[in-house]
Length: 149
Image (tube, rainbow, N blue to C red; front, top):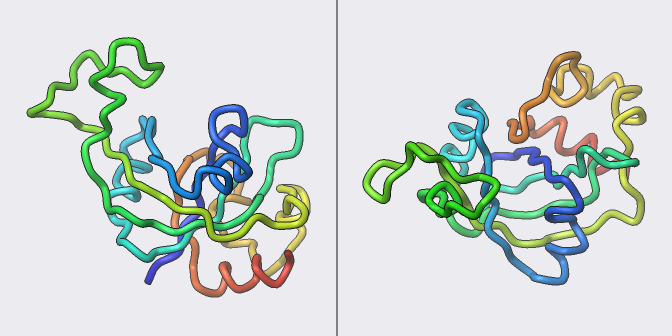
């Protein structure tokens, strides 16, 4: 099993939304490296749900992968914000996965707080210039963050 961190803007999909829905499609990733991480995910992998581009950015909970990567249908939908005019049903460069809610933390673990944790110094999330929406997390980083909740 592998661990990941995935970012979502809460007004698009929040941890509370995922908890209410139980499961959801994670789509709209339009960075090739982040897309490759999506494609590396396996059913059963777990991820930190990170709220980004909001007043309180941080890790809000956890989820798990329930369906491995498949072509992202939003790339084919002209009305979608994630539409890709180059994508076709036969050739779609983008991937989506299905995720399920596992846990909502009592409090969001704020980015500034995470940056203060020496055990997380190597985590891509806390490093300068790291803007990927999907990134791997080591088992040690996973355990450290869970201990902070």
